[in-house]
Amino acid sequence: MECKQLVPQAFDLAPYQFGMPQKSGFLTVVPIFGNDRNGQFTSPLSGLKLSRVTGYGSVELANPGDTGLAIVPLHIGYIQDKAQNHALCRSAFIAAGQKLMFQDACCVQESQGGYLEERDQWFFILPVQLRSQALSLRGQNDFTKLWEGISELNRQYGLSDRGHLEQIIARKRAFLTQYQSRLECLPGQTGALFFLQDKLAGVEIAPNAAYFREMWMPLVCFCYGAGAMYFEHNAPESSETKAIPFAAKTLQELRDRLHESRLQVQENLLDSLAKTPPETFKITEEERFLEFQLKTAEGNNFSGQFVEEKGELVYASLFAKPEYLAA
Image (cartoon, rainbow, N blue to C red; front, side, top):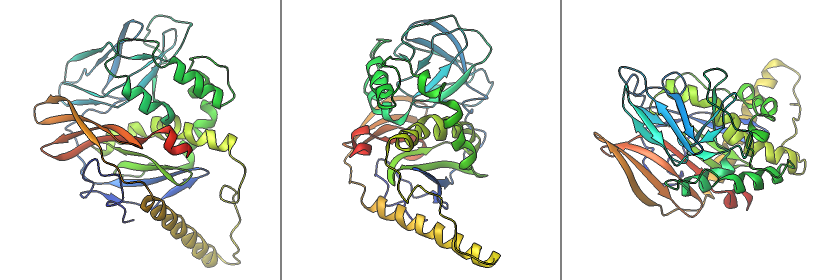
């Protein structure tokens, strides 16, 4: 799939290849392959640990390994038994054997606090509808800063008007995790384009395939799956979302219809990408580690963060703003 020149130009995607789209309801994923820096970076689930929460909005992450740089995934959050749930507003670097305290984290649970324990810890990525707001709040040490946004999002889902994100990502987990089986993370995949209602909703690129595989469920289920769930529950039913049986009498005819259907999905996505508004991004360097630079990209319709090494893309999380997705 040739789409590298149509992606918003915050960074260069020329070294990457794009696979065949996968579609489930309102969510479509285009796999990205290439530039696999195997072994240089630690993965977010197996190599990055939530070590402690010292108070509301103060979260410490650790890279306990002997080798490998940790690039903290943008907007990673943790659900923890008997602890206050938090999400980060920014990415960061953590060297091997080091810890980093994030004092500008967002509490995503308005009440019912607790203390950190080792059991039942799992992580998510903030729903796409909250991500541009969370990014704009980086550096602000106010643990309540995302509660209003979470409350508004809960209202959109018809849920209780509270700053409790677990109403979506925990109580709706059975629905959201369906996307993990409906859509497949492929061998060697290092990233993906995510579409909602055929609009580009996100560009997610990891430093290697192992890193992206551990990011797959949090991204496809809790970040972009949460956006798809909104459309599934609120948009009027249309022929685009109905499963229509293929008209085929033989196995070969079925294969032909399936191939035609996949080509049509690909053509629709290319048309959608061509209609994606051009962006002029404001790029701000946030921090450095050796030759690696963490930067923030702010545009009219998209924002996010990415990491480069001497101009070569290493990591990226770029997402659409909610007003663009709703337009």
